[in-house]
Length: 154
Image 1 (cartoon, rainbow, N blue to C red):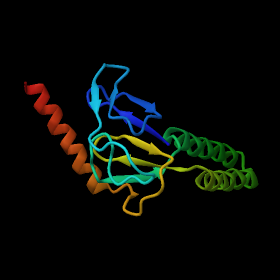
Image 2 (tube, helix red, strand yellow; image 1 turned 90 degrees about the vertical axis):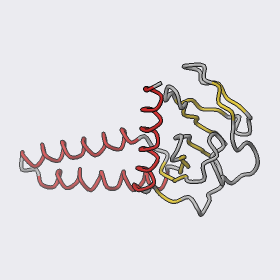
Image 3 (cartoon, rainbow, N blue to C red; image 1 turned 180 degrees about the vertical axis):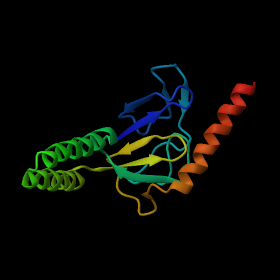
Image 4 (cartoon, rainbow, N blue to C red; image 1 turned 45 degrees about the horizontal axis):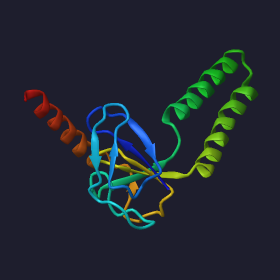
């Protein structure tokens, strides 16, 4: 089990194997974070950093890599299509679908907190945590914007 904590002050992220810790210190800015829902259990019911119950699941794969695979397959298929190599065009497109499907089945999932962005790996799946929902994500994005505006007016 591992937690990747996101600092609320500087937005730096760092991994920690101390999932049951009562506090963490940001290695970038030195901000001290106290666990609001510390310890206990193989299944997450709430975020241990901010105690938020709204969390979502996603594949534990870098989005940039996935986008890079997609762009590379598109560019390569365009080149083959330009040269009228239709078989190679389709081979690249179908191959990218196969690679995507393999990655989908091989890569595990990670649970992410909507509020603070902390990521949890190795925990038992919680049926209450669903894939990302834009409405909930926007609610917490607006909350972060309000907090940033409030900090800047002080």
